[in-house]
Length: 240
Length: 222
Image 1 (tube, each protein chain N blue to C red):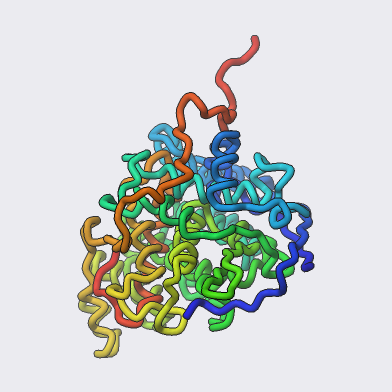
Image 2 (image 1 turned 60 degrees about the horizontal axis):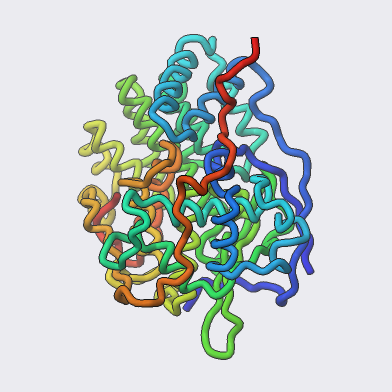
């Protein structure tokens, strides 16, 4: 069977745009968060370096309002724009201190939308799950820098969240040296989670059930000389 | 005809500021339009038909997903089925998907709320084969996840549904969830010209699928 989704007939739909939210305009810390999001989503080694610099500034100079600023943006972006929320938690994992741990536990345990079997294969529940598991991994990075925050991950395990969140929390607990404590918190039927291993890339093999033939058609254009799009970043040249 | 509204989410965090300028390339747009059988009627009325380089519109954001699916392998233009799924995923998808349509799916998508289904595919005898992308596809997931969704739907368009409700019974079933996991995993391992955020989201989404969408857990993660 396929994932069920009732849809109206074949006629097309219409779409209108509404005003956008500008989450990074309200303070210096918010602006820095915006820069971190930008560099985290840029494809270059230079951007990775710039990201680490912004994170360092956030660690040292946010004056303790990093958590408050992230929380404020989360209030604006409640149940949509999961990518932005995932990015903010990722940055909090890199720049936050022990105080961020409780917040990340709360984000990991936020109730997920109800599962609706007739809604289709992927839904907003999956995107909320990604935000929650992102919070678990952010907590891992905080605890790596601040070992006193490590036991927070056990709070997530003890609350028995949805399986993907629980599994990530158990994996993080093991990596933080808390495997035995996590095992004590798990019922026996869930102890198999501790045996989940990391697979090699070659194990991610999908059988295409076909061989190379003539059907290849519509060969994509090669990038390079044909690439005419403008660059994303501002050019460096400047008139004096 | 349904009507819907949206607010533009952050363009950096979704990857649309990274991939949007890349799809603004006439040769690519012409190719993708034919290869995935887009039709004007399914992409006008605000969905971006007359504004293809605008990365706040659904058409640009769908093309970003297709770009990511097409060009992320370090061995492009090799698309042999003897390689890994990052190499041949686009080849399979464009041959399997009969037509790619945009629809509302939900009445609105804002940073405050973007509920509902992401995509849908129907196929079979006496059926108008098609794949539909809904507002949450465009506005509630990043570019690399969109690419994974397109491949998932392509597996359905090829005639392979799920065999355990909305889940696959096992890894060995070789269904849409396994394919999506494999593509995301390979994208995270060796995807080119992409960002740390796109890679990391791909890894985490792949693990969430492994841990949630197989009735029998395969026993491993990415």
